[in-house]
Amino acid sequence: MLNQGFSFETPGRDSRRLTTGWLLLALGSLVIGGLFTLLIVMSRTPGIQDIFPWVDFFHTALVVHVDLTVLVWFLSFAGVLWSFNSTGNYPAFGWGALYLCIGGTAIISLAPFLGAGNPSMNNYVPVLQDPIFLAGLGLFGLGFAVLVLHSLFFSRPAGTAISSTGAIRFGLFTAVLLALLAILALAASWYDMPQTAEGRAFYELLFWGAGHTIQFTHVQLMLVAWLWLASASGAMPNLHPRIAILLFAVGAVPALLFTPYIYLAYDVGSANHILSLTWLMQYGGGLAALPLALVVVLAMIRVGRAPVGVRAERAALFFSILLFGVGGIIGFMISGSNVTIPAHYHGSIVAVTLAYMGITYHILPKLGFRKPAGKLVNFQPVIYGSGQLMHVLGLAWSGGYGVQRKTAGAEQGLESIQQIVGMGVMGLGGMIAIIGGVLFLVIVFKAMWPQKQNHHG
Image (spheres, one colour):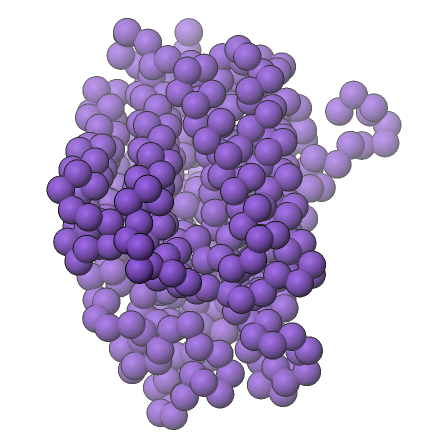
């Protein structure tokens, strides 16, 4: 077989259909999350913000927006990657997981319009403290748990012979193990919850351990995407599969070792429990990313411009690495609770999202759809990535001048010209990023839309 570098062979028909299902859920979550973005932007815009009828609609919409564009989008895309690498055995479990997640996502999206309110802006998975919303979240969580178990047993194995494909399969498998660990951490937090914890403190503690652990899953999947996109866009990384496997192991081991240790050593809710998990992610979360990024960037420099048909993949890869690096650097500048914190995690979140955008462009033809083509496709990652870079740098700049996080409108207390300029750059970058995000959805749905003359397409 010709060495295709770090890439997966196209799966069988059943796995392709399941992969498409997860992709549609992932894209759907971005569409609905995007509609909530518009509502949020309007609820923060001077002049418009006073006409919203809901009390605290900003925070209610923000909860749903965050859960759709981060939690549902990321975990559904994990479903895309794991299903693409699935053997196709026991499809009922695969489809069952997807249907549970679709049902959960629908309830989460409708909850604010069914009267759910009482938002809690806790970290990782903000919630509406309302039975409707929590039922949707629970249903989605159950679906994800089924997906993880299905992927654990029915992923294509890395194989005994060391190969590039085997290396990224190993990367996917470490991500599954880490996701399982995150689910166990969630259960342990719930079981060991201090009696006194209620309201926001309860949800903060409930998701703290699982939230810190699932980040490792996202990073591992992003690194798989980096190697895959580098190979797909003609920048074959000069990396022995053994080293790639070692790097994936280095990326996974901190969480696999220390998360169980932290739960066994410290009570949930204790200062040691909370701090240890923070340090685990701060110092262990990107260990494999830096060397892998260097290898991929060197490969991109070595080969120069990407071939015509894969420039979008290359652009997505470049901006993914850039934003992950910027987000990581900002992470070390955090002091106090200001907008430097969202600047840091926005960089990291957007890096994963850009990697997934590139993979979406790459796998559409493999799933039986048209390949997105044209200048607009090549520019989309540039528009989205540049906008997000402005957004992140604007937030980081404003954080340096003390703008507080999780505030809107007059509450932001923008006094100095530096604060106003910083938040202005953040807003402009956000708008450009929204345009880039909408473009991505338009391009992908256009490629997936059946053509009239070809009923089998």
